[in-house]
Amino acid sequence: VLGSLKDSLSPSGLWLRGSEGLYMVNGPPSFTESTAFQRDSGKNCKAVAFSKDGSLFAWCNGQKVNVVNITRAELLHSFDLPKTVCLEFSPKNNVLATWQAYTTAKDGTAGVPNLQLHDLRTGKCLKSFIQKKMQNWCPCWADDESICARNVNNEVHFFENNNFNTIANKLHLQKVSDFVLSPGAQPTKVAVYVPGSKGAPSFVRLYQYPNFGGPQSALANKSFFKADKVTMLWNKKATAVLVVASTEVDKSGASYYGEQTLHYVAASGESAVVQLPKSGPIYDVAWSPNSVEFCAVYGFMPAKATVFNLKCDPVFDFGTGPRNAAYYSPQGHVLVLAGFGNLRGQMEVWDVRSYRLLSKPVAADSTYFAWCPDGEHMVTATCAPRLRVGNGYKVWHCTGRVLHAHEVPGEQEVWQVCWQPFPDGVFPERAVDFGVSVPTWNRGFNHFVICILQHEDEPPQNMKPQLGGGDKPVSKTALKNQRKHEAKKAAKQEAKADAHQGPAQVKPPQSAQQNTVPAMTTGDPELDKKIKNLKKKLKAIEQLKEQAAAGKQLEKNQVEKIQKEAALLKELEDLELGV
Image 1 (cartoon, rainbow, N blue to C red):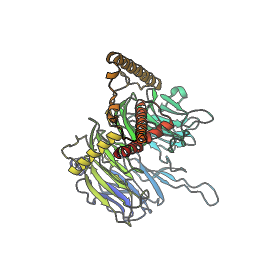
Image 2 (image 1 turned 180 degrees about the horizontal axis):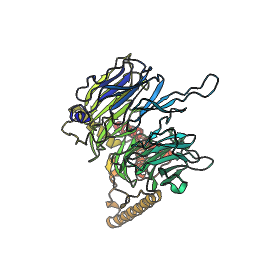
Image 3 (image 1 turned 45 degrees about the horizontal axis):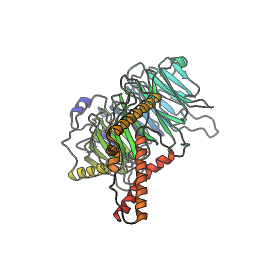
Image 4 (image 1 turned 90 degrees about the horizontal axis):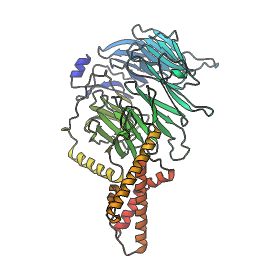
């Protein structure tokens, strides 16, 4: 069945959950309601889940949890769990996990177990646990289901071969607050996070199951002081983890986001701080599916986006823009940078093989984005409760065309939109068709926007690796020494040029040439003085931007100066237009 779906024109179906019930829409090009799934018109559908390969689908409609085989249009099981709010399949479809909100009895005694694990072959409940918090509610399986783990009382408990009556292994540290299992084949690796306390630093450690015997058994260790919470991201090949460490409050007062730092930890034991050349929040980090590159979106608005390699060297810098998210296509050949939430929904679609900008569509008021498994189509959606007006979704081709748009009537709401998943490899990478281009007016609009961005902000640029050779990540000290060396070399070359050419012949830097305005007088000394001061401030801002691009950490007042650039340019323009 998967083969016939792959060969058909319709790559993947869309599932919608909302006040109109739960139903499926066929993918491109038809977008008609699917007859493979009979609409559940109930208005109380709380949760849905797909199996990893997309063959099984489960949902709770406020009465029962139903499990169907989509490919055979067959009801497999129906569980009497009306209050279920979370559902998840194990990777090989052997177990369905369900979670209901935990409640205690009226007399204060402990409530009944609210996390159930169901055998999908027999329909029987394998095990029930008490799981009070919704956060990290679901046990985590290795991809082959040989191992399953859950965090209990600051320990990680491991079960083997879905036998939940026996704890096969425990990972016990001071206070493990989070863990992530590696994807892919055995052996399974585990990344664990232990928060700092009483002056001791927080740390992330990598282990290989089941070797947990003390600190010496760890594959890698990375400690840091500035961390109230962390996000840990394994790459697809399980060779490295990216760790975003966050503090609740930025003590410098520069950001209400708190402070974030990005760390690289390799399973081989190496680690590094990823040097981000613009200060400010880290909005998003994403691994490329190729496992050898990752993209970070960071810095005070307009935010920078940069692709780094495994040495933590920048490979390509996308410049600055209104963005706070990055999404690689499942095949890794296209990258979308987007500005959702409190931004206006601008998207940049990049071919990452050639770093060519494919399109710049705008999906205003979007609360959700997802790639279709075919790596060619995308969906954006506006969903309640995040936004209760203008609910609906759009399906896009990666060249920027809207192929289908659906907006529900004003009194209706959409709560969730998702693609039906498919196994890896079903949809191979397809070259992006540049012949299918955006409309003429859109092309002109894109060109106009790009020109403005390149004038006011930093344009995209290829980045040469800062240190050559080997696959080892670059340490903070090595980067610092490299920059010092390059600065000395540049100063020597400049001194030689001065001696050779004489002061009158020295050319200003390229950036200075672009910002040079011919000297002029207005006849009004006060006005001339104002113009001169404004130009002086703008020149200082240009120098600060260059320092930041070179990796220097700017002070709070320097960041504030840069943020005033647009206002100063406007003031200068007004003064000069008045001449």
